[in-house]
Length: 351
Image 1 (cartoon, rainbow, N blue to C red):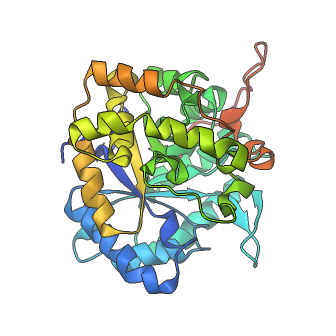
Image 2: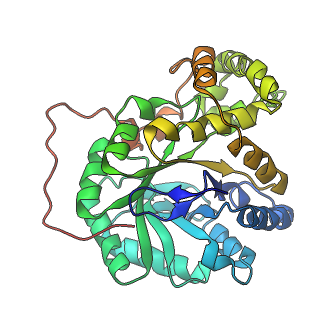
Image 3: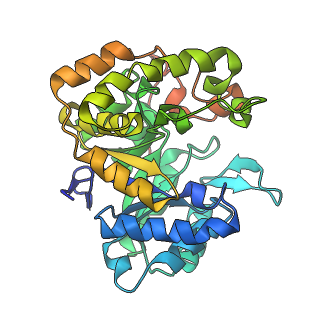
């Protein structure tokens, strides 16, 4: 696949990346062979960026990736690792950690599970509420200098945090939910800030947790996702599925699925908004083939206008997540106009 740098000075990446979370947190052990086959299919096709986290399956996901990598695969695979999500023995999330000591300790365990002497992109999963971003990024910078980390990324942070982090060490990319159903990064300054600073964007949730597949069917008795995803609430779901139906004529005209059209739309945003990579979360090898076909679709400006008219920004019913989860996202906070940016004496970098 054709590649381009992920941000100024970042590694070369394809327009697609593979999100590996579902291979561990929501998959029965019997599906492990499919998960490994999916990683192989991605790497063989030139989709080299693998997104994981130390808390996906409490380390299982990193161990799975280690076992999936064949001889020679590590040299071409780009391992993007998130840290900072704390989980209890029951799997529940119990906090966010960003202290420098935790950063280094977490990486030590990740390297052991991955069977690697470095990770390619290291990033805090969320903005820690009790640790300045400068301290977290500074600790990762020291790991860059020591050779354990190649590049530093961020996840779910707003413009102010992006600027503060980038002032400590160049940021490679910001991971953010971005799709036809989640377009706030266009208006809240995140995409503009990334483009201004030469930072790439890795967009996850490109299929809106399944709503934009075009094949979603309401299960009898309701969808358990409705507990934490308001867009699946009974009162919102019908309206959102009606929006999806508006995409079918254009998808049919290209001979592709609605899901492929949704992926192609995200990739097409790179024309005006800098490098944007669509992170495909899947555990089935055939989904890689479908995504590759979507990456080959060259949507015209007229197509993009037609899609905007079909699903205007803000038309989706319901917020991204339930209120308690939304409160954890720095990317969803509205900055105070007069807020000052704390200064820092620390120099160096982050992962």
